[in-house]
Amino acid sequence: MSTIANSHILITGGASGIGLKMGKNALERGASKLVIWDINTEKLEECNKQLANFRDRIHTYKVDVSDPEQIYQSAKKLQAEINHLDILINNAGVVVGQPFQKQNMANINKTIAVNLLGVMHTTRAFLPQMIERSTGHIVNIASAVAHMGNPNMSVYAGSKWGVRGWSESLRIELNNQNVTVTSVEPGYIDTGMFKGVTPPLLTPLLDPENLSRRILRAVEKNKMHLRTPFMVKILPFLKGILPTKVFDFVAGKLFKAYHSMDTFTGRNSD
Image (cartoon, rainbow, N blue to C red; front, side):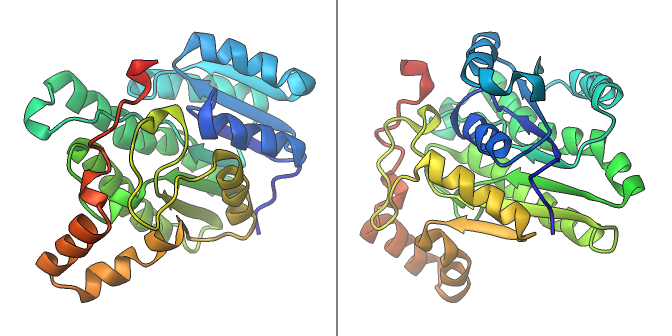
C-alpha cells in the first residue's frame, strides 16, 4: 500500500482548487516533501502564504505542463533537489466551454497539450526512477466525461477520454513493477474551473475538500479507480447495457446532463 506520511509528492496545477487542497491534506498527513507545479505566479505566491506553516516541506515552481521542454527540465532539477518522487498527481487541467465549431486552434491545442500530453510527459519524466526504485504511485485526474460525451466540452471530453485510456493501459503495463496507477473520474467539482455549470439530476457538485481527502485515501488503498458521485460509478454499466439512443434520452432528457454546460462561465468571468 502507498503511504502519504514521509513521502515526496508532486501535484501539477497544485497552487489552487483541488490541487492545493490535496497538497495541504498531504502535508497534514505527514508528507515530508510537497512539490507544486503551476503556471500562475500569483497563485503560487498565494499558495506559499496559505502553506506557510509547512514552508520547510514545500517546493513551488512555475511550470507550464503544455511545454514538454519545461517539464523535463523542471523534473531534472527537482530530482537533483529532492532525490526521488514517491507520488505523482497529474492534476493540471483546462476547459473551454464552447461548441466545437467555435473552438479556435489555440484553444484546441492548449487543451490537449495540458490535459493529455502534459500528463503523459510529466509521467514519462519521473517513471524511469520509480521503476528503478521499484516503488511509486501515479494519480491521473480524468473526469466523468471520460465515459460519456457532453455538448460544449467536446475537446475537454476528448482529452479526458485520452487520459482514461492511457492511464488504464499504463496501469496494466506497470502491474508487475510495483508502480501503482490510480485514475480519478469525478463529476463536476465546486471550483472556479467549472463555475456556472448546472449539475445533472442526482449528480451534486463535489466538495473540493472532501474529494481531496478521498483521493488521498484512494492512494493509500492503491485503488485503480475513484469514480464519484454515485451516478458516475454506474456510468460504465449504463453505457454498456443501454442502446445509444436510449442512453442519450436518459442522460439528456431525463437527467439533463447534456445541458449542464449551458450556464457555464468558468474562470474567465472572474
